[in-house]
Length: 208
Image 1 (tube, rainbow, N blue to C red):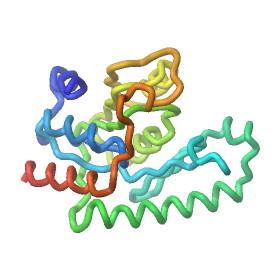
Image 2 (image 1 turned 90 degrees about the vertical axis):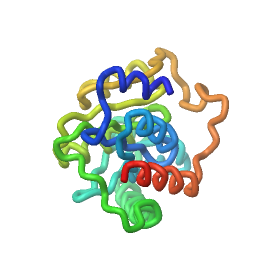
Image 3 (image 1 turned 180 degrees about the vertical axis):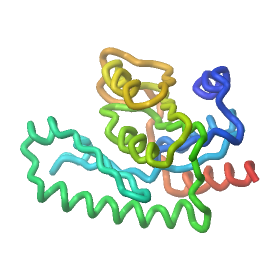
């Protein structure tokens, strides 16, 4: 896998690296990277907050943790005119969804500690960056040695923003013209819960 090869050549890997895939599409990419680096795989339980009537338009994201983190695209929210009541209601709904999914994905397993380690945050691609930004902010509270973002594709302007908040970004492509992550895939079908669970379990077994 090309991303895994680039990260391996940068000398990441082993037990001092934790690969963290964003739910759900980031997990298959993260699994291949974790396998290549011989590192444990973790899941980032993050949910996008969509605009009213246009769920696909991300106005923010929320991730669970010791202190749940919320990222909001305030300029976009202001431009669209989304009321605070809507955002407060959706945040509660998304947080409940995350906690239900945590029981499904982690089961009895403890969350992997990233303190003092290299955390590699992986998704299948970045558009606005809302989801990955909130994951990075939550990770910083866990005091990893460094945070690296690894994605197949990211818009050039978003790449600039990622480099401001992460310690490094590894991307295969950063086009100036960007419409959607799916345009860079021949098959962009949704990853199922069953596939996520299977990949997490396979990774755990290989790292025991």
